[in-house]
Length: 206
Image 1 (cartoon, rainbow, N blue to C red):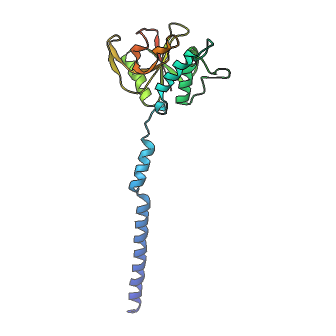
Image 2 (cartoon, rainbow, N blue to C red):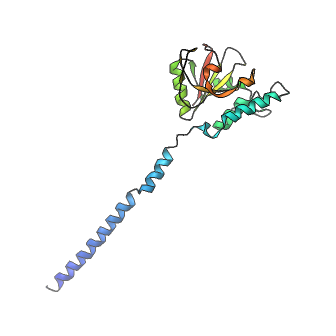
Image 3 (cartoon, rainbow, N blue to C red):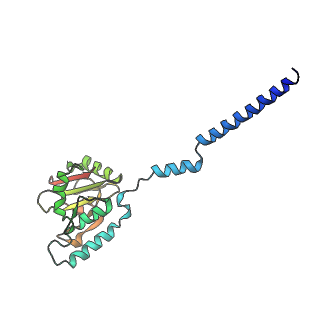
């Protein structure tokens, strides 16, 4: 009996050590290391917009050059849809002949598509909503619906600034002006591109 007791105690000690080692291994396996936590944060913290990789100033320069050398009526009239398509990787503005549809085709396409939502007439609430959508990486357009070939501008990421002529805070826009190409820009307020009107409608791509 005296010889059996030490052997029994020895076996219990061995089993106890193995259980402790397994517990420590499981704890390490289930816990995240600092490197893993940083990697996970980097995967979820990507808030850059789709426009971040596109040089809008260069798009404006290319458009102005295109208009100066244009020989046909439809030359350069698809510049805004080309820019939008490149920035947001869209297919709905593609055209088999021109490459991209001309700008006056944007509105009917947006109104037929379930991917687009019209926010209605411009006011501070709708402007703020559209800019928030843009700052999240979305596409927001303002279209002059008063005529078939109404001007189209794209809201660019950033903040709103007070406009005296509009008596409200407005975002900056990309404006490629087909009638006056030299007036095109990518970093000025909406008030430089359009006059305040109930005919201006905001469209956002969902």
